[in-house]
Length: 298
Image (cartoon, rainbow, N blue to C red; front, side):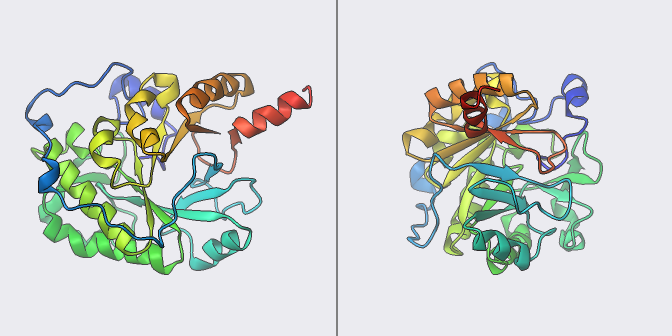
């Protein structure tokens, strides 16, 4: 979802999308899909791997998906780029500059343009992802069928030399997928993927899914949230900050004045903020940028 946001504003009115159009109102469970989450005793413990990188709170981030090649000149500590669209040479070039590099991986939806698209069995294919042509939700309950595909993706991320992986669409149970998914199904799937990532030496990040932040924070090394400051739901990610883990907020704006206000909010929460255009090209601003501009008197 984070890759394609050009028509997001219109879609938020017609058909709200998770994360992108999340309501500022507090989330409360309702309906079968929000049944009680599995008890901690039912879940495996988080994989401990001392070799896994742990993103610090004060790092600066860059996301680039819309244009190619990736702009290697951007002043940021961490780059998040697509798993399939970038080869090991790009990763190595960024790391040579002292950057950490994270691969983007869609964990909850099928995309028809991916090189492994034909490997997904029909049994896991659900409804079309509303608003995103070429995408369909996956039945995350069928971990046995998804295992060879998702683990191959994690292997590819590791083999290309990435430092971490960002899992997207990991809140399927809150959407119209065509399956009767529950909160328990989602937690089991997310925990499984997070542990598999750490076993491969990859730091693992969670995109959105603030509703399950408290249960999942022990398994993930950081969280990324789209628009939570401007939409008023960032406090749902407090469990990550309470555990000393980074929370990175993506806000879609080109206004330095608006970003300055968001930076003050983020500072109070101990979160980082990255301002992007919806095209997700190389453009970026962060709180460090606004401070430099202010000190220069411009």
